[in-house]
Image (cartoon, rainbow, N blue to C red; front, side, top):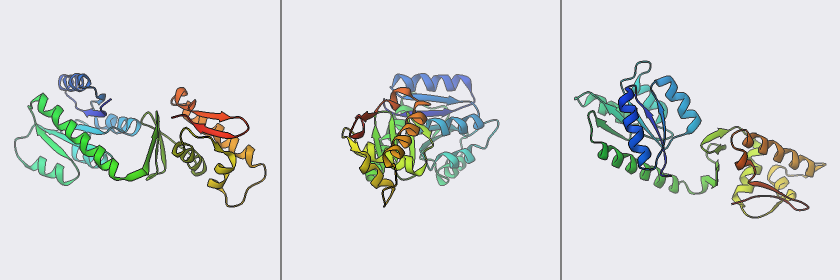
Length: 227
């Protein structure tokens, strides 16, 4: 899969055309015909690139651009001939723009270029992102994402899962996991770790049962995440 793209466009014909072309190129495509729907969709799927029509019926396109731009690449579409929309869009965080009508092959090329820029930026962040299969730990914002969907963890649950993912394929003892959480070993520490693991699995299972099964119990030793 080349990446995730969210299209925000209120013209149904344009929306469908963009979706079909991007899916043909191998992108995972999500769509919204309204600003409010786009914000909800954005928070649930965390796209790599947003293609944003500035002229929406219910929300200011520039405000949406500001909301999206810190977390993804934004390509704005505008039907206006003047440069003002382009300049404002770039100033508030857009990464690229195109005028309507546009050449579809050029748009695909620009989306691919934006995705390359995003991945290079992610690589420069070093080990702040750890990923095994469907599980992605983002150490920068202390978050877990399962297939792109954010899963809320407590700070201790996050530390345990981060340790397991960073040691993917290796068995991590309960003692090692306790050392991640406490400076002094608490009473019944094995039961405490088992409880945390149960909670982590349950939360992941609500999004993807298969992903939760990556966390394996190794009886008599501890736990591991299968790579």
